[in-house]
Structure formats: C-alpha cells, structure tokens
Image (tube, one colour):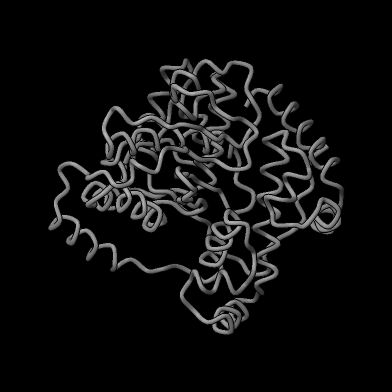
Length: 353
C-alpha cells in the first residue's frame, strides 16, 4: 500500500535544480562499491553522462533518487556520508569563493546560508544561535523529494569539511543531529563525526560551541570576496512561491509560522507578499500547508519521532490539531501514513532497483 500524498500548491513551479559540484565523483564511488552507475543514473531520470560537468545543473529530486537507488543497489546504507565527505568549499564554486574569503567564521557561515540557494534548490541551509552553541543545519522544504535521509547524511558530512576548512582540524562538533532512524550499523557515523550522533532528531544540524564563530578565516582575501559578491548580485532572487517556502522553512525552525514573520524575513510588506502570491495563483496558507506537510512526511517516514514532537516541530499547540490537519492533507491519520510509508520502504528495499 503506497503512502498517500494529496496536498499540492495550486500553482506549478519550476522543479528545483542542483549544481553538480562534487556529485561528479558519485559514479566512480558507485563503481568502487561494486555497481555499474549508468543504469542507476538512468533509473533516477538522468543521462549517463549527466554528472560529468561540475557546473551543470540537474533536478534536485534526481540527486536524492540516485542516492536512494545507489544505497539499495550497493547495500551501502551510509552512502550519503561517503558522498558528503567528497565535498569541499572549492566544490561550491562562487558560493565557496564567498565563504572562503569571509573575514570570520561567523561571516563565512552566514554567507553560506545566504547564498547556498545559488547552488541548490529544494533545501535550506540555516544557522541557529543558542546560549553558548550554534547549529549549522539543513532542511529540505520542496515536497516529494526522494532519498532525503541520504541527502541529510551527505549535507552533514560536507558540513564537517566546510567548517574544518574554516576553523582548522581542531574543530569538532559537540552534537550531531540526524533526522532519520538509527541504522543497524552506526560505525560509519562514529567514524565520520567522532561524536555520538543523535538519531530521530527534529532537524539536521551540526552543533558546536559558539566561541568558534569569532575565529578569523585564514587566507581570506577581501578583494576576492568583493569580486564574488558582485557576481552573486547578478543572480536573480527566484520566484515568490520558492522564496516564501524557503523563508517558511526557516521560521519554522525558530518556532514561528506567521505570514508577518515570513514577510519580515523577505524584507517586504505582508500585503505585498500576499498580492504576489495571489498573482501566481496561490495563498500564504496554501504554501504553509505544503511546507508543513512535507516536513511532517519527512519526520514520519524517516524517523521514529513521537507525534507530539512532530506536532511541536511544525508549530502546533498540541497533537490533536496536527492530527486533524494531517488527515485533511493526506486523507488518513499520521500513524496510518507512517505505517504505509514503512511498508512501502520495506517492499522497495526487497526489490532490485
């Protein structure tokens, strides 16, 4: 029985794209793991040579699907970690140039979150400051992306490389938050993070002491930074539905979900935002429902997080209103949806992709 996916935003949006970067190395990794990459690329909807050019862009969903298919074919559940550790700041192109030439680690990581969308649609990089620590995280916000658990693993492994390039080899996360269930073999995670990961987390993030943020980035060149900023300014901001979706995913991480919060984040008046959404055939509430539904599905499918915690993550006052709303979205209860998704995954893993 397939898990139902009923809700959609009423306006069609271009599918999000992903710049190839270090994903160019994925075919060779698949070969090293004992499989032929070409049929896996084709099954994910990609041409056999789709990943050859680091500057090329492919559908974001296809990358997630490729990681999912490759994990099953190679029997390597931690393939996301292997893919992520191939990424370095230089693989981020213009974004990496901006980050590497920032004055401090705080400037660099803020730059990463601000400009990350130039390389990748579908997911949001974020920074959350706490009393004495900082979370550098990532959240997929586009509906229907396959393989999100592998995407999150890859992002966390890549984040380890990025921050170590900025801070030096002594940097170490104090906590690693992974929003999927604990795998049978956690050894690769211990080896990667040198810390005890927290699985079934409400978000994907590397947590570390805030004291690292004041550290100066060695080798940063202010002129190269200015040149990169001029190039980045020439890139468009994107469509309003995507902007609102990204902003909503960010404010949800701060425990908020109002249109006023989103409009403030986008530096526009609430009425202006509503008018632009209406012009594209949708409303703020429809976009909010879509983003919330996608987050709910990720947490129900990939983790064993309790329904109360899922509801709280989505900004509901309690589990009952969340359950009522989810039933309206999906036509079934969260528990039944979770069981159907688990059965679908079990059947999928039993088949040869």
